[in-house]
Image 1: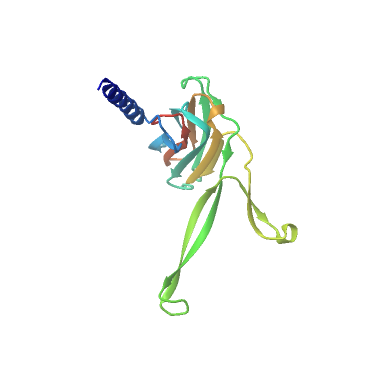
Image 2: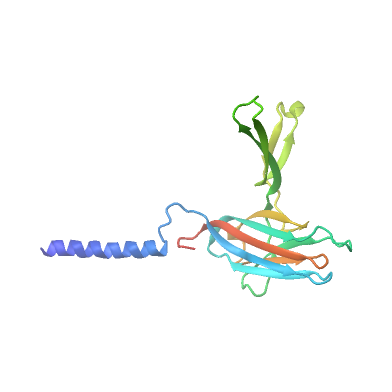
Length: 220
């Protein structure tokens, strides 16, 4: 009887331990990526031709290895009547404190933006008058550098993807743009900042960004 009670007590204790661990997310068997909202959706309104500046900061200490950062910046116009182009730019900064000692992050990789047009036949049968083609243009962020292959040189044609070239985390573009940036979180300091520098004239900017990657055991 005492043996049975001991077994039941041990089983109950184990059940509580497992339940607590599961509640805390400590058993992450699949290592699924987590998402951190680094740049909450926000609108920056400019007056005149002064340069807008805003910085978003997050603690990235729990991320492990390679992470992917998706940034979007949208402007209301490419160029206004005065001829001032709306330019969206950012710099990725890293800091051990989150308040000072900021420095540009290095060894950053930018994805290549490319578009692919997909076609779809809509109708009862090909060759029948009751059909039509619809076309969809999709924009992809390719994790590397695209190169067009020449059949006379390679023996075949098409595209190949080569590893991207490491650079600093600085980029800019006119009007509306999406960037995908990859870097090794283990080589960065505790805090990551996105410093926006947006120019133009009386422009409105909408920016947002999310960071994705594997984290240490836990819910986040």
